[in-house]
Length: 299
Image (cartoon, rainbow, N blue to C red; front, side, top):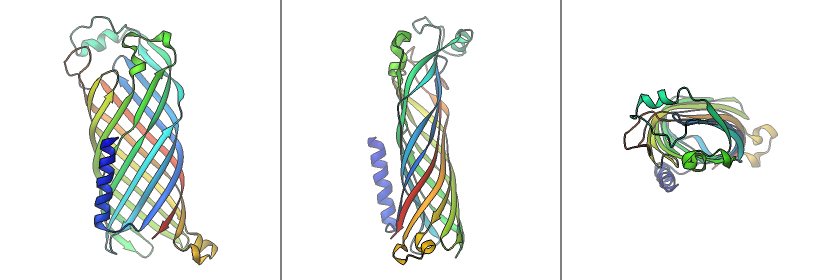
């Protein structure tokens, strides 16, 4: 989390150097975090957990009235501990293995996976920060394009719920996985003032991400590369206009849905079996869906 804290602080300093903060929006959301991970061919897991998400966001703010704008979104998500199943290869991990490579897959191919109950939990932080330019801006809305950067630190905990099923290395008891990735890419967003009291907006981004995965079983850093995608839609309601309450002129409430996908399509590690690098042995992908309500104030 030290890397994340430093990155968040630098991002906040960058934003404050561009312009003073004009608005903040606090959101609470509920949804699912889908996880898929595998240490091929020994362990595989594919599970979905309910998560609560707290978000601090500024979706779009023009800088000193110019077409330039900045945006940021900081998510903290957390799940309860849930019992799910993990598949373990039936081949004992203490068996002598041949030359590292495709022969490992051939050796395991005829073995049946053993489903083992385990306790899962996911939590972490996701930070997106971007700047852009409004290519179209009217009194009713805007369309903007820009760049997005950020850092993500999802942390997955897995605990074996059936000690008698432990294989060599007590694999599940050490199968905690922390992913720290940095991303950069392009983003588009738009908004439309449908009525004096209702604004609808949306944004999306596509990013390349790179970083490191730390896993207890592998006991070493895993270099990860892949893509990160976001999609968000929002409706913002202004009570001052709707209820004719001038004292609420700067306040608003919001409702929306967001989705983030982390796909790690390239990984290289050194396994405890030997020092040989085995590209693609460890795969992972995460997806975070959240439907949220929020409240904010324009300063």
